Amino acid sequence: MNKNNCPYCGAPYKKTTTHVVCEFCGNALKATKNNQENLSNFKNTLNVTSFDQSYLEELDDKKRAIFQNKFEQRKKYVVIYVLLALFLGGFGLHKFYLEKYKSGIIYFILSWTYIPSIISIIEAFGAGDTIRLYNKKIEQEIYQEVSI
Image (cartoon, rainbow, N blue to C red; front, side):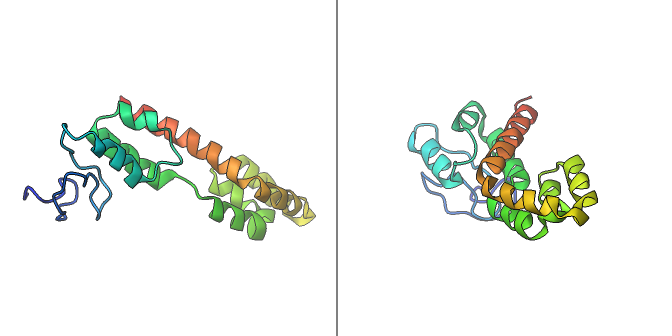
């Protein structure tokens, strides 16, 4: 592979001192060790708002990229959760979205009573905290997987 190609996907990238993430696949690329800005640029590029930055600092570049990719694949979004809770919450689809299958089945079984619909509307208002806690749990699981 060419030196200016991403080692993960093979896509070409511009070689600069601050470019640490492949624009095509999002994998972390090796940064120069003498440039302290690279780590902060890497964190800014990732838009680290949902996982703890201490996880990134403890991982090497390859594990950091694996962590990022796995987290991006498994994280949940507030907008999707709210839409599911408001429009299909009576059937428990917002619970299935968060992999809470027992709750989802209970909502589905009781859907004829309209009680799950009322509860899901209330749950839509607390969606931010619910998703934040879920994503925190996911990041801890991924960190344990990757750090081994």
